[in-house]
Length: 183
Ligand code: S3P
Image 1: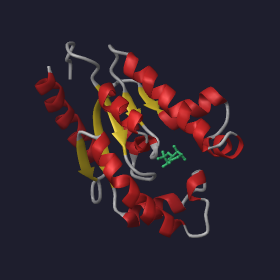
Image 2: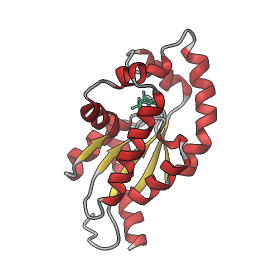
Image 3: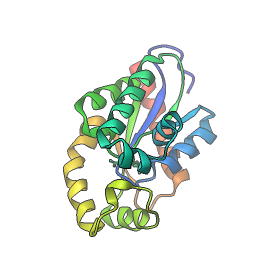
Image 4: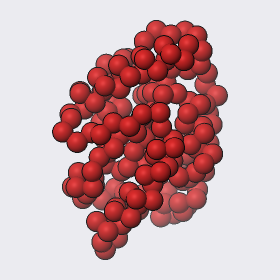
């Protein structure tokens, strides 16, 4: 991808917790050489606390404001190529959904409940899933959020059965097509 013209050729990954946004983001960063922004990490760096500590001490609203602020900055950065891995809840605000599409080509990494459940059970970093019955909560959240991922994205990839290299290849090809058509 070498499009100089029409807007930033950023690739933005959205999807539920555990859908592979960070892993695939890192893979795209290595393959394309574009700087990679992992929004959770960037917010942690700016606030000086982990996402879990931000939720516990400042509250979820504070975190959501930080997400929107960061998206606004990324939307204003008109020239750069970036790979952006978002947090799973970023699509919940309508304002964010509009910003995401201004930032670049938005890809929804979709994974089935079983995979999400298995991956998120492996670590306790996610404050929203620190509950007695994470499985039930995941099911409800997947259902509530699905229309938001749909509305926020240009393309969906069903990731089950694909590894991160295959997913990245699909994204690179589709992004090339997207940016060429848009130019
Ligand atoms: C959240 C997802 C997390 C993180 C925060 C809230 C969510 O990011 O932003 O814990 O609301 O789904 P990952 O999707 O990278 O786990």
